[in-house]
Image 1 (cartoon, helix red, strand yellow):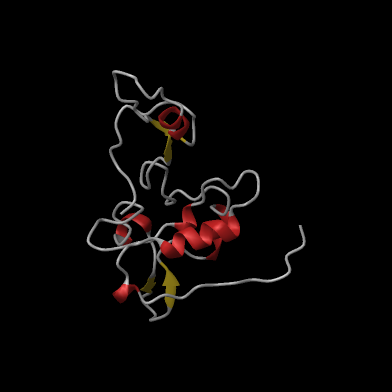
Image 2 (tube, helix red, strand yellow):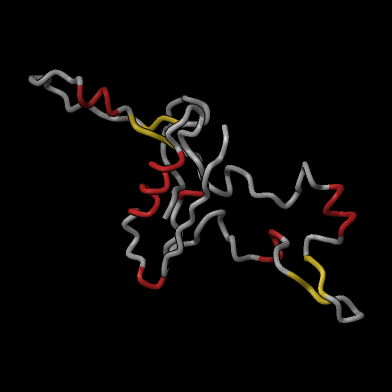
Length: 143
């Protein structure tokens, strides 16, 4: 695929009301190909909430940001060049799916195809987008 252009969005999050119009627009623009059904970057971080990954502002856990050495120079908290090079493909501080949340979808077609005169209400169960199995309860999610 030949990339012809790059676009970006900048939004004032002070005025964000959490409507997710920006994430819907982003998803429409970037996820129209096979294999891009769910992408983490199109989530919108709103407050209040703990955010994602859980505790993302905890610099001790994720080792983000910078620190000063004894000589006064700045270096990344995640280590120097050699440590970063060794962990380039297997970062031990990288958040896992449990730190984010397991993406899910619902069985909307069961709701739409339910018989009109059914004595029981149809239910759209949560289904994992990672494994395709049903999820008993949703414990953690975005926003």
